[in-house]
Amino acid sequence: MSELQIYQASIERNMLEPAQADLVLTMMQQQYGAEFNHKHEKNTKAQLRATASRILAGLSEANIVLGLQRMRHEQRCPSLSAFRELCEYWKGPNEAWADAITYTKNKKHPITELTKQALDRVKDMLIDTDDNRDAVRMQQSAGFAFREIYEGLVEQAKLANDIERPYVPQKTEASGHIAIELQIIPEKSVYEKLTDEQRAIVDMQKRLVAQGMDHRTALNKARKELGNQKLNKLDNPELQAKVKKQPKQKFDTPFQKLVAQGMNVKDAFKQCKLEGANK
Image (cartoon, rainbow, N blue to C red; front, side, top):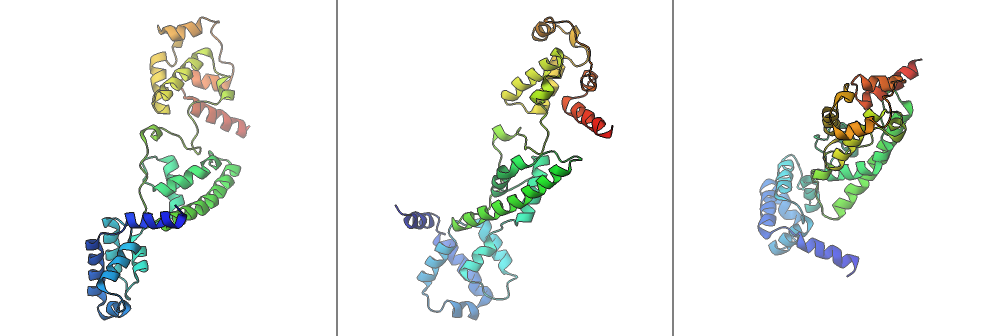
């Protein structure tokens, strides 16, 4: 089957119901009267219905209602193609980018499927921007790339007679972290500086995350079960096996001291980084 045949089949599958097409045409005729009749005088009612069904293919009832509401503010009778544009609400690239940035910080913020797709394409360019000029410039570059990708996705969706849909995260994605956020689980270079007691907490956190728990909840649970400041007094066999391998280590670095005092790994790392920059 050729691409043209595939496109034609897609149109036919999603054509508007005759009753819906008649409703749209009736509303347009009532609002514009003689102008509507003059615009379509060469078409029979059946031809006009078929044309409307084809051009408006794929639109939901909510989209059609939106188009009719917006048409009330149009002074001239729109063509059927122009009416379809009234039915569609595609967020502009700047609005979509603003939603994407907000979503990286708050996963409950609503975004569209195309916004999420564009964000996934540039998320590796997004890093923590606290007091980091290079990261700010990188985020600006990501914004330019995002807008271009997003506009391309919208154009493809329009050509496919698609409509804008809200993004609904999968259960496995609910605890995911976009790269603009610092991971709570430390990197290898940081992990190597931890004591055995601290590594036990991180190891348990990793296992809980692998089982589907989000990072922060897993960290809190690991701290609660393995202890925080009084690790050597717990009865947990897993932890004791690690602790007995070698004598208790001293907390020689500021980072280790902060973690031992109860500060989480992320905040301790950021504080040491900030203190180092101020020296």
